[in-house]
Image (cartoon, rainbow, N blue to C red; front, top):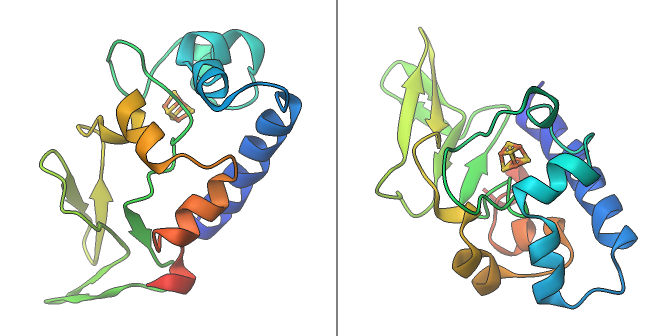
Length: 144
Ligand code: SF4
C-alpha cells in the first residue's frame, strides 16, 4: 500500500470514529482515542489491536494522530538523495526520527518517535478533521 492509499483509508476510519462520538468535548474525544479504549471499542481501526500489539511501547499511547502532522510523503518521490529517491521525511527533523533505506529508496522511520502520540502534542494541533490537520501542516503529497 502506498502512502496516499494509507492516508485516505486512515482518514475514512478516523472520520467514522469521530462522527460516532460527536457529542463528546474535545478533551473527551482525545480520551476516547486512548489505545486501551480503541483496542476494545474500535477493533477495526488498527491491525495491531487484534494482535494485542502497540506501535510504540509507551504509557498513555493515543491513536488520534496515528498519522503525524509532520510526516511528509510523495508516492512518486520527494527528491533525490545521491542515487536514491526519498519518498518520505520528517518536516521538523524530530530528534528521534530515523530513516530506513533500501537499494534505491529512502523512507522516514518514526518507530522511535513518540511525539504525535502524546496528549500535549495532540491538543496543540487538535482538529476534529484529521485530514484538515494534515493538509494544514502540508503532510499530503499535494502540499510538498
Ligand atoms: S497509533 Fe499505533 S496502535 Fe494506534 S492506530 Fe496507530 S499504529 Fe495502531
